[in-house]
Length: 233
Image (tube, one colour):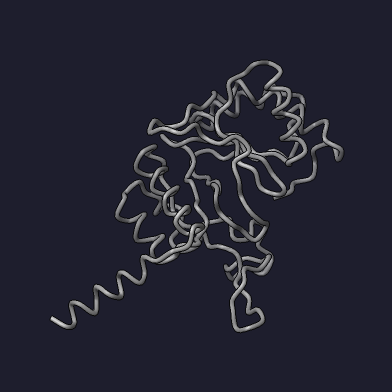
C-alpha cells in the first residue's frame, strides 16, 4: 500500500507546472483534440548551464547537428511520422517534456502554410487586409511569418507557381510531409507567437485557400529589400 501511495505522490509532483508549461500543454491539446491537427514535440533549444547551477535555454539546437538551420524548431525524437491527434499521447509527451516546442505536421487534413521573411510578411498582410480578404491564423517568429492556409496538394501548388514569372527563394511552402512550429513555443531563434491568433471557440480555425494569398506573398517577397532571395529561417 505504501508503494502505491508513493507512486501517487510522484505523479502529483510531476503535474506541478508553471504558466508557460501549462499553456504549452493546453495549446497542444486544443490543436490535437478540438481541431484535429496532428502534432508532436519539437527538439527544443539547447540547454546551457548558467550561474547558480540553473539551466538556461540557449540560442542553439538540442539536436546533434551543430549547424542546424532551424534550431529547436523541428522534430527529432520522435520523428514527424509520429504526429498524432491522440489525447493520451499528447498528454504523455508534454508531461515528460513540458517546454518542448509544439510542431504541427502540415498537409493532408491539417493546415498547410506559406512562410516568408518577417518584413515581407508584414507588408503582405497589409496588402491582403486592404483587399478585405479574410485571413486565417498567422504565426510569427523573430525572422519569419507564416500564413496558415487550407490543405493543398503539390500538384495544385505547382500549377500556381508555374504561372509566376519569378518565385523568390525566401518563400517556403509547408505542405504534406512538412511541419511548422506553433505558439507558444520557444526555439533557438526566439519566441514563437500569434500575429493573428485563432478566434476562440471549439471549431477549427477558418483557413483561406492558397490561391487567394499566394500572389500577395510572392509580390511582397520580390519587393523585399534584398529582392526576396535571402532565405532566413
